[in-house]
Length: 324
Length: 114
Image 1 (cartoon, rainbow over the protein chains, first blue to last red):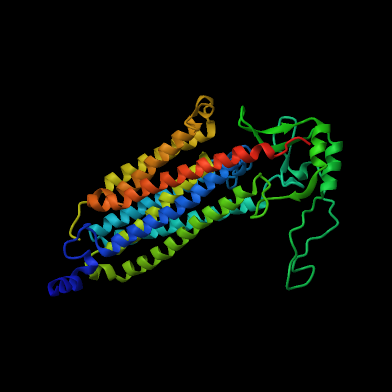
Image 2: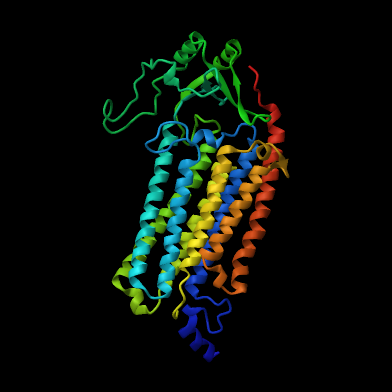
């Protein structure tokens, strides 16, 4: 027993005397943390899958939701998120290069590659923020019916058009902000459009039709109604104007799509942010020469594991939110 | 930690491979070939199956080469991989079946005619 105790005291942080798994304590625990975190993300994505299957015939089409690209106007689905994926994979590469340089005790190279990794992480989180901004702001605007369905507006070709393209901003109610009311509070969001104004404009504009949330399984596109009389039957049920997306309502369709998008990409973004912070701490230690004195760069390897995991999760988020 | 040989070349090769897979995914996602998009196989389109398989390949590449699973002992690799490949497909299968069932029960009650 005594011998074991002595062994533990000297070797416990190196994985024990016999090293049953051949890895140090720290690395092993990082792996098991990653395992549990992977199961957490799997739970979220599986819940997303359940909800999506539940609303399979009305789920928003991702290609129509995420269409923006910086500095370019128009409809570019996929390109931006592909760019984000590349940024994250690239920062994973610089991380693994830092680990590789650490194995060879090349401090200058570790510094360079860790620095690039941190920059890559910051660029990724910034890109994510821009994606959120576009989603929250919305592009076209829609009308929500009393039973919660979202109605969008299209032209004769079935292409979506914005509320501002045909309706007047005639809402007499002004949004209560800190600047025009009580200085210490602000009111709920008020649209500049009114449902009455939109219906009136819809009646007088022969070019416009509506689009339902429902997907036609044969074309995998949302059902478009160009017949005025039929479309007005839907619009008579209007309850409110919806612009953009939040946790309660979503102009692109099912509000649960927005809920899951915000929650899962938000949770991933939180992981990236904490990864950046941990990377900065380790980077500072590399600069101070802590690992040079310790004789090995295993801490860089451990934080690298976490960073690769964040990349790994993004690979799945990318597939299940944007591709499938 | 002694002196290790540099794996820089392998790292760039893996990066090239992951980029290639991503580019293929994006191209397929943009053009959505009709024959793949509308052919149903085991509950979803062949295109979706391609995406899922490519994603798993990418995930494997990252774990194996970037997270250095190829350097770990077999017992350790199994203790990480087995819980994932047993529990996740189990959970996903049950939840997706449940989701499909709720849809079948609920969807007929939703009114689309006004």
